[in-house]
Image (cartoon, rainbow, N blue to C red; front, top):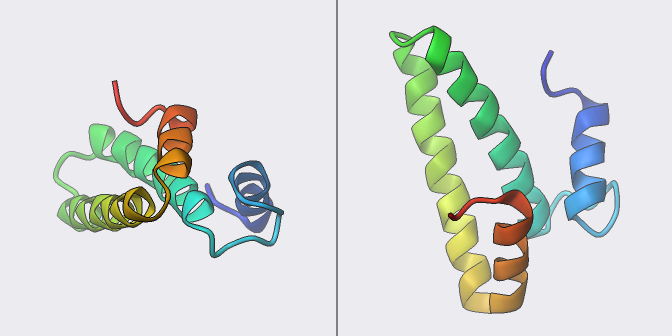
Amino acid sequence: MYLDSAKKQEIFGKYGKSNTDTGSPESQIALFSYRISHLTEHLKLNRKDYRTERALTILVGKRRSLLDYLKSRDIERYRAIIKELGLRK
């Protein structure tokens, strides 16, 4: 499987406060970004997979909501996660 518990802990350790920090917006945004990139690669090969396309759209919306929340609460943390993940050009 592409996203096992070891990979999740690695993502949470890198972007969150610790390996078990699953609730911070930064760690959730990083996890969603990883899943979005995986689904995007899947859709490049399987363009008629509409369920995956819908799941991708929902994930992008969830990530956008978390980014908006983080932007309204702490603009510096927002800018840091955007820069670290490379979400804006």
